[in-house]
Image (cartoon, rainbow, N blue to C red; front, side, top):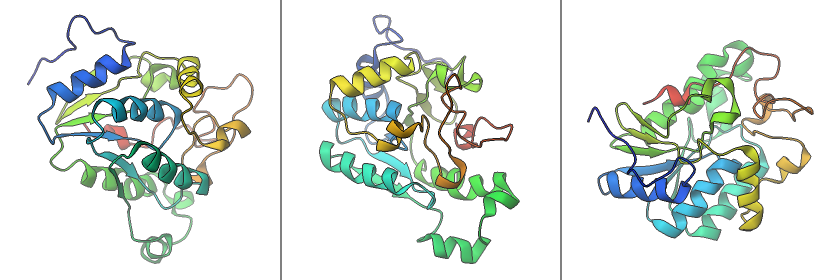
Length: 224
């Protein structure tokens, strides 16, 4: 499978068409949608619930999410009747810290992300041949050239890649999609609570992640 592209009549901004293509193209039972319940992921879930609600939704609970994020995950799963499958690095935060110590992100951020995000996602993707993500090109410079369809060990599909932040929020508000109330407090991109801050006027959407560090990604999407 060296060559794969969208059908000719599907535009890069046609989120519904892209998700329909993914459902049709990936072998039955091989497709998942991953989300941390950010705005872009919520767009995908709203569309997916209408097209193929049986497609599993993968959520990596790092054990360090904001309480509001975990509450939203429950609300969205119930609202859409989705099959949300949660993967964690340990049963509880206390168990994790007994094994790796407290505030691991301050001592070794790469190892912290490997344990809390990359390794659980690797488990979530076992046997998966297609993966829908909520990444967009305008979120950061590291995503600026991201294609709609990526080929690696599996097909990775980015339905909202060509959308802007304004497109996403118009869709959310027009469709009454539940969203994280932290967004109304200046949190543009929400990750782990200890590593996420509100952004300031004029900053990139993901500037509040890893504040003060030269980092744009956690390594999760290095998985192909």
